[in-house]
Length: 196
Length: 151
Image 1: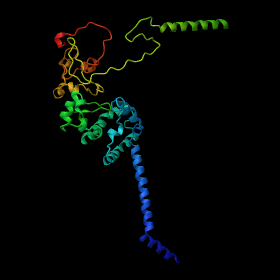
Image 2: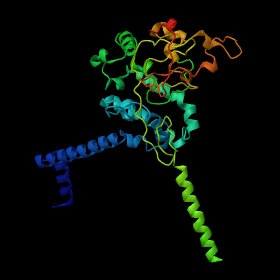
Image 3: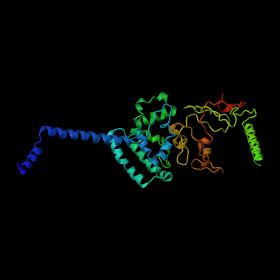
Image 4: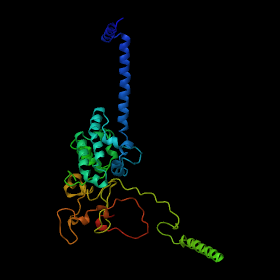
């Protein structure tokens, strides 16, 4: 056996692998896929928890404190809506798009753009507007994950709610965020905001 | 000398304890909070349940600020926003069916009329409050004014 002969043999083998080799490669790919995809998804879900959100003091000392006073944090029946329930879409494609967009927040954290309450308040209006716009564009999709108009029992609602929900929401003229601004956090200066 | 010092200390201690004993004694006086003494923390009363959503409530006397017949939890009134005015302001009252705020609220202290709510009348809950079914703390003989729609 010469060296050249040996080389030819490997080349031959790679060109036409036997079935065992083919299965081996497939198996590696499959296992690798599970590990990679599972790991990615697990990491993604970790960033989708309240603990992760408030691991930044910008969130914990500002918006989280404000949210703790509201009905989405503490209420009669103990059902809660945590940060990602409102701020991250549930559906996968939209979730990934939102997550990629949110990577900008990492830059914000590094540059410390809102790292004091005063700085936070300076940016409150622009940040709030971004969320209002996002909600408006999706017809308040994240609200509707829990609050489904189809199942709203008007007889259980107050007179004021019935009127507004029937006239504005039922006709599709308005969406949740048009009226329900600042339900979980303090409002910015509302000068020149529609309906305020 | 040592003996004298200890006697003084014992006397002093005795004095303070007797003083403390006097402080906690309410002397039989009952306040609106009951007869609890200063050194004990009384259990807080249960929170009142506010009315959910009712029609306007008749006023009891002339110039009484109208009472709020609905819940106002989470309604912010501050420098940034005024949740009450998003319904009761003149701009929105027709659409929402809410009672308009009185035009007296546009007047300043020295009688000048402004084009929007006067700062001194901006903080609604200073005068207008949500009602709850609360029993009067002190017995009284007040009768609501009949001409204002009271039975």
